[in-house]
Amino acid sequence: MPRFTLRLPLLGLLLAAIAISACSSMSNNSQACALPAGPGLENAIARVKDDLASHCAVRFDDYFQQLLKIAEGDPKPENREIFSEFLVWCQQSDILSKRQAQALYNRYFNLKFVSLRGDYNNCAATCPNKTRVLRNMEQELVDKEQGLLKISVDRVGYQRADRLFQETELVLEATCSACNTN
Image 1 (cartoon, rainbow, N blue to C red):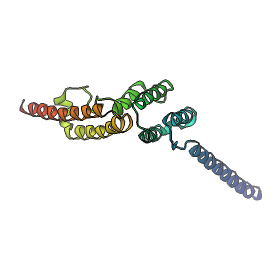
Image 2 (image 1 turned 90 degrees about the horizontal axis):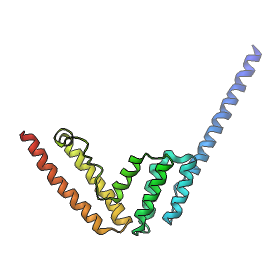
Image 3 (image 1 turned 180 degrees about the vertical axis):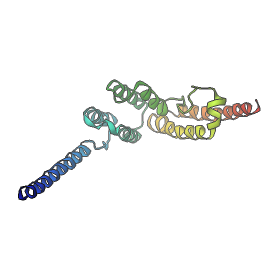
Image 4 (image 1 turned 90 degrees about the vertical axis):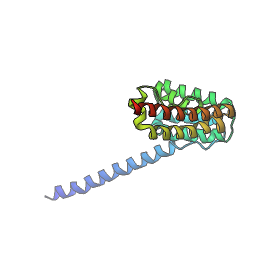
């Protein structure tokens, strides 16, 4: 019986050591996955690539949002191409699928709205969810404002995206009204 009581405290100490070690390594990973502060989009992207390639890919969304903020601090037309190259790298590194990379680029830097994909018949798929679709498009327009206007300094491109949103809203309203009369 005494041997059993000696082993139980040793087992407890072993489990505690394992737990402390796990917490320590998690802390090291969170420090290693610290978001870049900038300035300099290209330098920040180089650091992000290193982190994503090693063990931080699960934090891709956080990294991407931080890169957008850094780019706002130095807006210029070339930023669009820098983000395009970064997203291609992410796709080639199997961090994102090709479709995910394209959708992310288009959401911020293209006039095309990814929130309104033409996969199905509008009467059957879009009109029943019209409010949600328009809300998603409004949020995407905010993202396009960030990408096109605040990061890429493309005022004309943003104005075209805004006009496309307004036209789509009108066409969708008319289409859904026509669907209800059939």
